[in-house]
Image 1 (cartoon, rainbow, N blue to C red):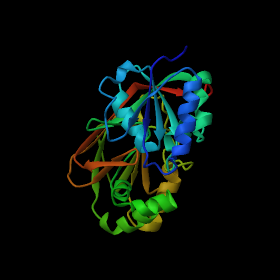
Image 2: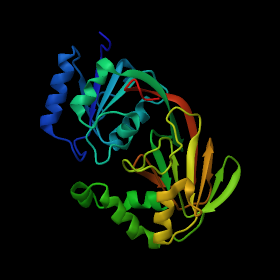
Image 3: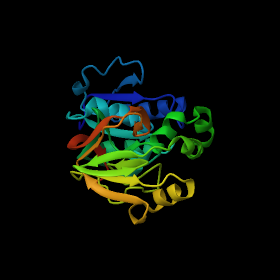
Length: 281
């Protein structure tokens, strides 16, 4: 048997979570000869000895993935994402089907690959981090609207935050000082779904991709984030270390708000084992 002991982490607050699908997922895992131990995010009963499990399955969205990433960074256990979130950005990046039952097939057909992570003051992220407007939108998003409208709730939140995002931030990128109003730092290409803000990013590289936005006016900001590296109102770089010393700017990782600057962000190559399709990477 390929895997002998598995932990199934679930987030019942994920947008596409259902008890019926959870039972289907659990039944299908058991058909493979694996009886998973179940961990509900927030209860923390089964994660103290995380390396006792050779497979960790995550039934949830990007917040649940981030929870698992912070448990498993630097460890040997393999992670398999069973997506049921709003955007499932990491699953799209890794080529994992958004249907959890189809994703389970990777237990047999997938390959283990070691990917890079980023870390922000010790908070690991698999997909991306945001500083400034991007993170303020995450902090202030209306959760009820998010459940109804999905990713469009973040757009509404970002538009509401624009008037608050009126102070320039100094980013020190591998020693180079650059000013802007906000930044997206990508470990992967995707941003909020199929859209790509960091098109040159790669889960297997030894750098992070950084986009710093130099304008705060709504039309210029929206154009810059759509054009990314092709915009005259954005600076696009590859980097290993990003430092923000000044206080007060919002920070998020993988769609989870984690605080305000000062922050230090760095690349952590080959830090997580992920089960994914053979053709990825």
